[in-house]
Image (cartoon, rainbow, N blue to C red):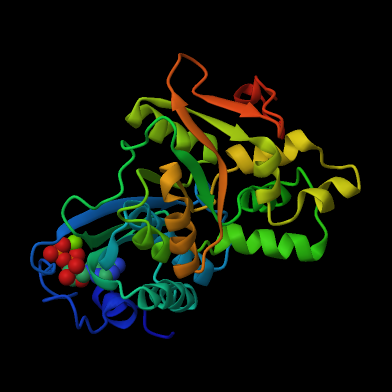
Length: 331
Ligand code: ADP
Ligand code: MG
């Protein structure tokens, strides 16, 4: 590019698109949205900061995808249908070689979910991406963190722990076979928000959250908000790592504790953790089938009885790894 791009050139070129659904998109002082009659707006913001939420080596296309994916994941956790989003961007410089793939990665995911870019802000500064998403949900049907009941089943979607495997490879604390790393890296860099599952779980799940900081942490939010405790079968949890517990343990570099550390506390998974009554087991399976998303029952909600809020047990129900939360298996 011979001519340096101005702020408004940049916005027009990369971030201005037709918005058939929104009343008004990019270009005025405000965007205008019209939710369908009677619907509630679901709103969530997530910021991605270089070095903290992504590595400087990640491709701009993957970064664009992930910046929106982590926001859509919050809508999914609430059972909300995406409508629109805004993008606040701080950029070190207006670089077409970065903006082109970034906007393509971002907008491809937006299009896949019918989520329109309606506005934002652009400024010069250290790379920082803040997205706010707007979704809609029928009144009273949003999935909340506060509805889990003692006796409910505890479920997670998809697979857990692989994003953390990739992060540890990048940090140099472990190495993986090429194919295993490629799969784990895709989970870290281009997560899949579970939109269809979130929608399908409306009226079925009693509580839900997305797993962004690790299963134990995000389940903890549900337990606190609902005033309950939980038990997790670690023999089932072990099997949730897509890389395969047996494959990882085969050459002796991995052990059960390390795998469970990734699955239970890895972070960056963007799966859903949710609860549902035992009587709704068939309905949960039907929702999973409809959403074409794997769902695994990993435990149960129990009455709160004092610390710890989460009991980890083996297949026979015997306690394991009682001090789990205080271990750092990668230190
Ligand atoms: P204002 O000065 O009113 O804050 P700006 O001059 O910052 O507006 O932005 C002009 C228009 O471009 C606004 O409609 C704003 O929402 C939009 N906009 C700015 N940055 C972005 C971006 N990164 N992505 C999408 N729209 C943007
Ligand atoms: Mg502005």
